[in-house]
Image (tube, rainbow, N blue to C red; front, side):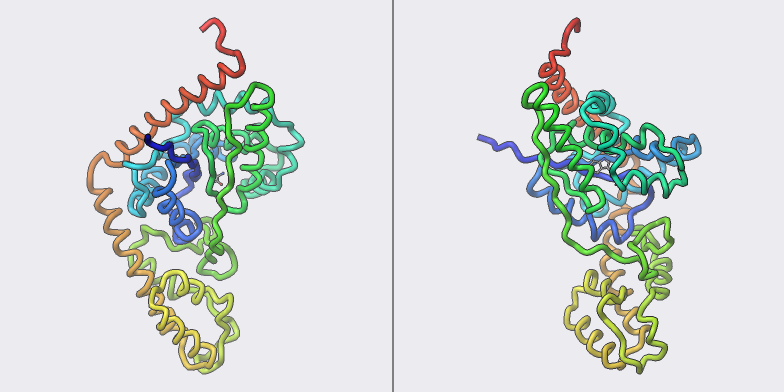
Length: 336
Ligand code: TRP
């Protein structure tokens, strides 16, 4: 008897090309989870409308999605095993969202710091209705494929908690349809940006992108923030919390080299330039095959379109099944 694999749903808003921080914090984990779970990866374009409904933004979305899908494929998201789809291509999302809006209170949503933070970042002083509903839409994303687990970063955990509450409330009112999905939280520490001050982020201009050409990677690494007290190579430096060494720990597989650099850094026997050059070599060794795979996918016409068309199709079928269960449970299948 074939055993039904447990399901995962996770994904990203289409905000831009992926950087090293995305790889460390989430994509690496997703690639692994494909071995164990039936994976659904959503590109949550509707969620971007909560803060950016303008046509100028929507005109950019297809290009952004294309870049992200090429990144995913180059990193090892495997469309033969996993379903990669566009949120707005699955109308069932909107229907489930509407039903879920009745199962959560406004104060519950207004209490979430994430919503206020998104409003602030977008310079909005009053909240659009849809932004308050962001976590409800996310619950619809997660429960539409009836996911068992959701791998997310710390910042999204409260949204999965809302999802669990909505699932519970639905089941209580109408009978058991949904699991309460578990959070799979990534344990890896957040990768700092090249500024060493913040997490890596496109908007902070401190990112190294997976699709960056060697020259851009070199600039990013060589300009990286290190120990500010160390104005000369013969001054003992601090390794802990020093971004250059955080990156060495993540990207340099040559442990002996890293240990030697750390020792000499602490003793004031190595310059920043040598540390950075060795880091650059390690990052290039990591990025070169990714860049090659990406270029190959980009050269083959129709790859992105085909992957998304078939992912959307699979997700629409799953959505149809879920919505039938939902309507039957609610008894809202009358006069069909
Ligand atoms: N909220 C996620 C973000 O921070 C994106 C997202 C939308 C998502 N729907 C999801 C993540 C469902 C996990 C599951 O960008």
